[in-house]
Image (cartoon, rainbow, N blue to C red; front, side, top):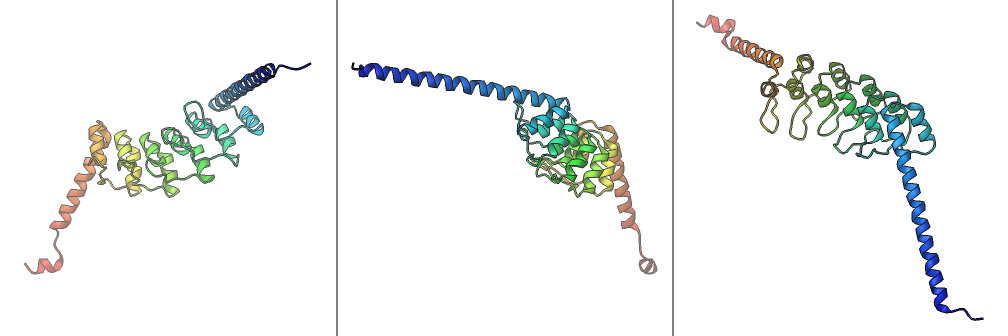
Amino acid sequence: MHTDPSLSTVSRRLVHRFALVCAGALASVALTAHASSLDSLVKAVKFDDVDAVQKALKQGADPNATDPQGMPLIVLAAREKSDKVAKALMADSKTDIEKLDSAGENAMMLAALNGDADLVKALIDKGAEVNKKGWAPLHYAAANGHDDIVKVLLDNSAYIDAGSPNGTTPLMMAARGNHLSTVKVLLDAGADSRVKNQLGLTALDFAKRYHAKDVTEAMEDMYAREAASASGAAGASTPAQNGAK
């Protein structure tokens, strides 16, 4: 009995198509399972469910995975103040603690913004970079008036007059938010109040522009005292000059 060659060809094509359909279905199932697993992990991070996160990591979850918006888990943990999860992620040697989200922010920056001193210290102890180029953690701490974190960062060699991409300094951010105590901390530590950003604005200009009354009054008083002191020094004469009169 002879087999029709055309039937064999058709059979092979059908088998091939069936195999492709099966492969596609399996891939779809795998992708769905992965998405579901990632969703569960992201939820666990948000709710600081450290047990669930540790279990997922032990099962091979990627500690550097990102949520649907492109935010790394460690950054998400910092944003949500999920400190237990953040520290569990930091304990994983594969975790990149400097990884940025889509806005260019890392865990240290959001911890500083949120006033999470414990996490800031933990990240520093883990070797996180204090002096990030551009917007730095010190900008973020100063912007929300977190004096304790400003001090921690300065104690760990944060550059006090760090410039953002347009040259805005931490002092300018503190002045903008009318955070008088933060302004004083920065000035006492040596911040330069006369630095201008690329728009030609000083910290005092920021205070005036954003109606930061307390900072405006304090800085104007500081400049008035400096001017009076300089004027007094210029008017003083030496004993030799007095004798010459």
